[in-house]
Image (cartoon, rainbow, N blue to C red):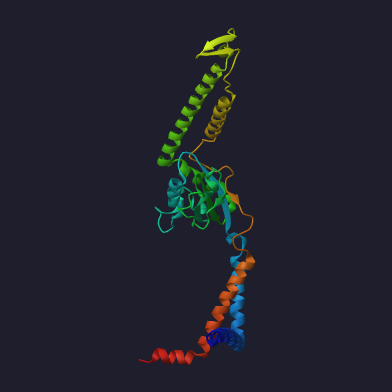
Length: 322
């Protein structure tokens, strides 16, 4: 009984220590905030000038010509798998303006006036829940587990995101972007091979439909029409006992043929953007967000300069000591 009571006392002491520490941290933060405000007030002229410069710079940075917009598109991959297309896309994602050979303008054969407005290009896998062939979710975090065999990466979908400063140049960029993929020899080889397979599958399905249709002719059922009484396999059959119907098989083959023809109709290029790049109407950062960001930067600069002014003699003496 005494041991149980001792345990309860220790738990209460532990809770008291936790709340004391929490209170001490809160008081320390309030003291730090108060000392910072006093420091800024002592150097209020410098603080106002630095904050005004920060807000003005944020206002200027948020001008329409400097705003960044997102343009996104879902790509349909014909023939190649998503992993192969993503590897081809890495050439554009890792483009650098440090040299002419690695620049985006050289890789896409674009004018510098257009290429310099493209901030970045990203590609993301698309997750297919239940592996039913339907794209359900974009893996923006790049964290989808390979061990998840139920929700898998779609083989024929890839999601692209482009950050640009000038949305009016997107049609020219989109044309060059698609040309980069659709002229790639690896993607073209897979595209042509799959397209040839589709043609052969459609021909085979057409032949199967003709065969089923021939089996369904009236002549197929007239073999025993005139035989009302038949002795077969030690059994006497009176009248027609069974008639083979092929409607179900015919519908299955016709459905498969329809899907193959639809797939073939969309096989126009290795990579297709059905809707093109769709631009988000809201910029990545608005003018208010720019101003708030540079306001806090100016605040940090003002605090640093104020500390340097108050302790400049000590800092200079320290730097002069040998």
